[in-house]
Length: 247
Image (cartoon, rainbow, N blue to C red; front, top):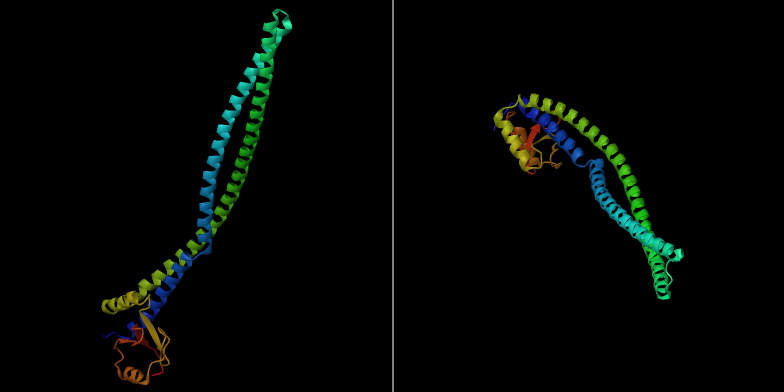
């Protein structure tokens, strides 16, 4: 392939743009805060689920407490009526009195048992409510971290996008100076070799693979016409000659 030396030199600037664009993308892809932000958001979602579960427990225990309260009140009321009946003196039959006293005793035991149940429920309820408070506090802290990290990531993305736009504009300007045939070759090589399509020949060394060219290859390059598009035998990128090529 033939191409004016100026077009070949332009490939070096295009390569510099492409390298910088890859570096910018790598910066975004490997931003530590992005990884941390993803972890924080996972933690936030976990806490959300835990809060929902804890609030459900609180709600269930509230219902259990209300039922226990009602059961205790019912027994207390029954016991109160029996006690009033006993104290009224209206029952004179010894057997009836004995049965009433036995019922009052049973109700007292039943009331104690129900109050123990009620106390246990209230203790569990306090624990569940404390868990909701703690989880809610943890979520607030996580949300603060999320906001901080999101701002850092957004700032980095903004900076990258600003520079990316500048680099792309420079690249477009450079591309317009290169023939479609030469640019197509460059793009093909770059796609096949991890983004490297053109490299400078500097003092007998390819800056693409950083290997020194053998004397026979250097001699062939010296003899090649200035508009000849050369390739590095090692890395296969377009080898661009400059005043510092050492030829």
